[in-house]
Length: 147
Image (cartoon, rainbow, N blue to C red; front, side, top):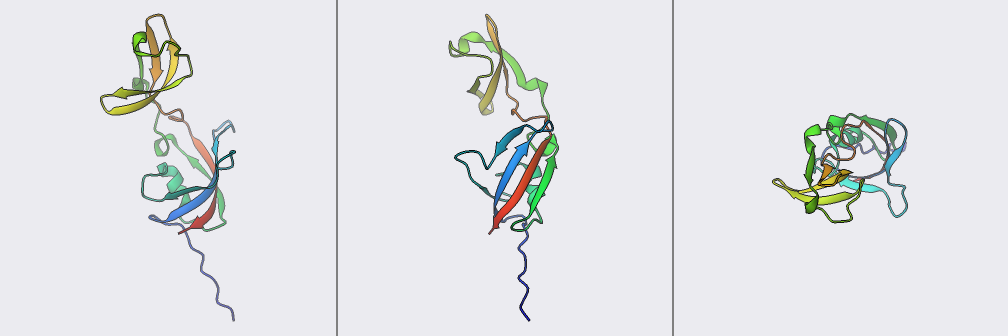
């Protein structure tokens, strides 16, 4: 009788490679390993390389397994924080600053990425929240390999 091959299941500390598509609740895709120039994502679980909800969704999956994981904001990029929106003197920005621009600046805590919300005569309103903060994320995941 042939010996049955044991399926390797993903656990904390494993290096995994996955294909994924990330969507918002309205069905719009915000990221995918299938985008041009991309490929499967490789990461080590427990090494803070993935958002917590994505990691939890992988635990117990095996090679070839597929599933949909819904991730609440607190297990993704956090809740949206109004206190991370501020107005700064326009003179501190490049002359060609426009609404929707993403810029890197410095805060007391170190480098910060901000999105420009408004450009006024004297000030610029910026948002330091992650663009996906406060959003429920839905990932279609397929495990390609487990090491």
